[in-house]
Image: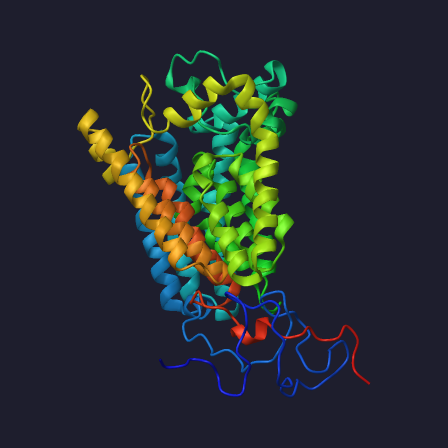
Length: 469
C-alpha cells in the first residue's frame, strides 16, 4: 500500500481526525511577528477551529472563482446570458409578474454588461452590479409590492401568520381550493408576522409588511454570516459577490415573485459553515429553524452531523444533532398533537400530489412528467425519488464530507435529485442547490471540497494565547 502521509509529520490517531493525538515534531518556523500577531502562526484563525501549524502549507487552489469572475469577458458573458434569460419571460410566460420582471430586468442586465466594458476596471464590476440589482430586484419588487401583486405562496405565508394569531394554528381546517392549503411548517408563519402587525393601510406599511422583504433579509443575513465564518482572511468584503448573486436571475426572479425558499438557502449555507467551525449549538439551532420552515431541508441535518463527526468527533456531532432535534420537536410537537391531521394533509400529502386538489407547482421536470401519466406514473415518480434518496444516503455514509464545501455539494446533489424526481416541482426550486454549490466556494476562496489545511494541522496543540517571550 502506498502511503500518502507527508514525511516528517506525525500520523494522526483516531477514526478520522484523532482529536486525542499529540504531535511529535516541533512546529515549523512561524511568520515574522509584529503588532497584534502571535509568534509562530498567522493573526487570523485558520480552518477548522484548531489553530495548529504542524503541517506543510496547503497546496494552492488553481481555480479560484473570484479570479475567474474578475475578467471582463466573463462579466460580459454573464450579463448577456442574464439578459437573454430575462427577455424570454415576456415571450413565453403566462404569468403577469414574470413578464413584468422580464421587461424591467433585461435592459438592466444589458446596461450592466455595457458598464463592464466601458468603465475602468476598478469601478466596472461595482457599477454593473448596482445597476443589475436596481433593475432586476429593487424596481420590480417595489412596483409589485405597491400594486399588491405576488405569487400565491406569499399570500399563504401572510395568512398563516394571521391565523396563528387569531386561532392558534397556521392552517385552515377544511381547505377547499388550492390557495387554502399551507404546505409549510409552522415556523414559516414568522415571515408573515410583519403583515399581521403593520397591515396594508399605506405604501410604507405595504412595503414593511410584505413577506418577500423579510425573506430577502433572512437570505442576506445568513449568507453574510456564512461568509464571515468561511473566509480564511478578511481580504475582501462580501458586498460585491452578494450583490451579484442577488441580482442574478437565479435569485432575482424568485425574490421578486415569491422568495419563500430564500431563507432555506441562507440557513443551509450558514449551518454548513457553523459545522465546519465547530459551532455545534449554533449549527443545531440553525438546522432546527430550517427544519421547522419546510420539511424538504431536513436532509441538511445528517449532512451537518456527519461533517462534525468527521472533523471533530462524536460528541460535537451528537451535541449538534440533539440540539437540532430538541428545538425542532419543541416547535412541532404541539402542532402534531393538536393539528396532526392538518399537518399530514397540507404539509406532506399536498406537495406530493396525494390530495384531491393538486398543487399548482409544475415544470417539465422528470418527476412531473411521469406524474402526468396517471397513478402509475405518479407511483413511478415516488419510487425513483426513493431510490435517488437511498443513493445519496449511501454516498453520504461512504464518503462523509470533510469541509463545508463538500457538505454543501452533497446536500445540493440530494436536493436537486429530490426536486427533479418529485411529482410536483418547479425550476425555481433548483436555486437552492445552485447557491449551495456557489456561495461556499466564493466565501472560502477555493474550488475543491478538500480540507483547507492537512489533517495533521487539525491535531496540533493550539498556539498560546499570549506571545512567547
